[in-house]
Length: 323
Image (cartoon, rainbow, N blue to C red; front, side):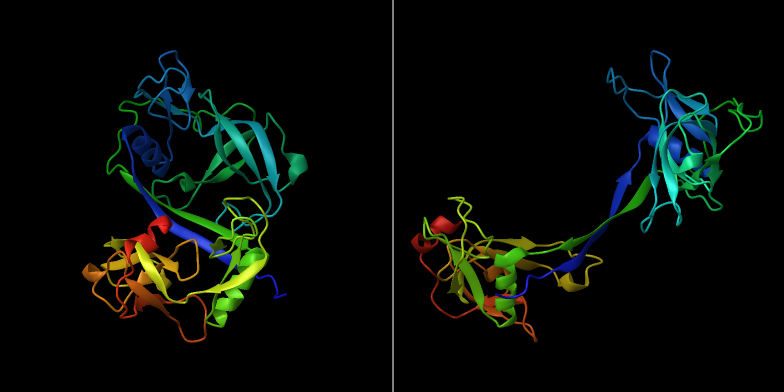
């Protein structure tokens, strides 16, 4: 039995969004070292501010400045910070209710005294980042703060035109990233090992006798385990396809000129279509029923793309159940 494979994978992309007037004011305020909330019709002050009352769904727009000081309402200790977190040493995640607000703001608390120094009711204040751009990271973290009552210079300072700033922030780009270890299991490990030998191997259901590629270790129709391996293809038939007109960015292995075609391909002998890129033919000549074969990269692995075999197109009746 081949070794079960494992791989460390990263899914990462930039998430771009525009901001409405409330979120724009909040983030611009952080850039200017001002914390803003929004007042509801019944007088509650919500921080961070939202555009609609979560209780009544009423639209909210009255901005209120609150203090950079507050009280910890709940917390959890992070003994091993991960990449991209606010601090590179152990810290506490805290929910802080700023003075003048009725809700809590989630952020990091720098607690040099360790978890024993953190407790509900702890007084804290904002430690501002040295360089600020209009993002929640403009708050570097919270830090313990005494005396109990905020000083006048650190409390809310009422002023006219609350929430009005020059050069407001109108949009943000937030990096999204997921690091994880993937183990394909017995069936897919065997499938990947076969690809290294330029073979395509599926598994047959002992009940319905269908052959699934890639195999999952169980029949999705009957729900029974599969173990009988069946070599299929490598040729197949295009069942459906789409034309891709948007070029992938920040992804080296998808640096393909557009437009190109991605298709579902029913390999000969398989009862489930897999997907692959179609090459060696103009994109506008790809069609249902086109007979194709894999083009393997040097060193084995998953086919780089599929190209026409030159055979006559398959009849619709031969692949209609695989659409």
